[in-house]
Length: 95
Ligand SMILES: [Cu+2]
Image (cartoon, rainbow, N blue to C red; front, side, top):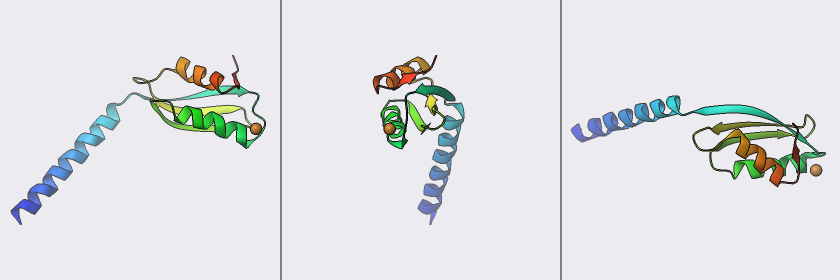
């Protein structure tokens, strides 16, 4: 019984620590204009390349709007690097 209570307390402490770490993480969201995407396959390949990049937490790419909305950790990756990754897919970042 005592052990169970202790385990519960430890779990709570870990969850609190995790929550605090998340709150302090330098997460940013940016929208990058991308030229040349004509169909959902284009946006899927851009999204795939972005999601494979370290530090990218999520990437929503819309071929109709020509936009990539990216959430990333700015301690691990820069917006300049994200632009490089998009250019590397064969589509071009709009200036
Ligand atoms: Cu396409």
